[in-house]
Image (tube, rainbow, N blue to C red; front, side, top):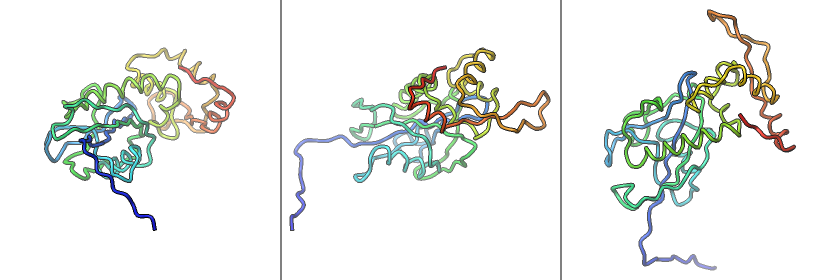
Length: 233
């Protein structure tokens, strides 16, 4: 039987970690999930959910595990953002972080303060506290990536309930892009794409004319993409 060979390297190697910028939407402002750290470094400070990648994991699998263990979030859209490798980014040792960002409907999750965490909380991106490590840089890049991505992919629907009004959809895009959007042009453009299904249901108990609810037709979007459809707002 062929025996396993164990290699020993003579040079130092950095540790590998992953950090996650998790965005949620509550109908008004885009928010970021932050954890208050239980241990040093940056004890009692806010930071992104993060941790070390295990030997048997990919970076993405590690990110999803960490989100579940530390905040109770699972089954979310997640995408790799960037590799942060500044030499002094972590005071403990040489650590490289493969960062990710995720979009969630925050109403679908009950946050928990999990492993090594004192508190898990949503923070408006306009009022973020001072963050540990280089997490402010990660957040800034994640926000810019999200701004660009929502213009050419319908990822914003990950932040909404299964049914939503056109006003709620516009508020979401304004929250992400951090700028007002012309109501008439937005509705004309988004409905012309044919990706929204109007439901036979309206808002209830609102002090104005009730609006119809819509849903995102993911199947139709995938079919159109195969034909060369270009989503752009």
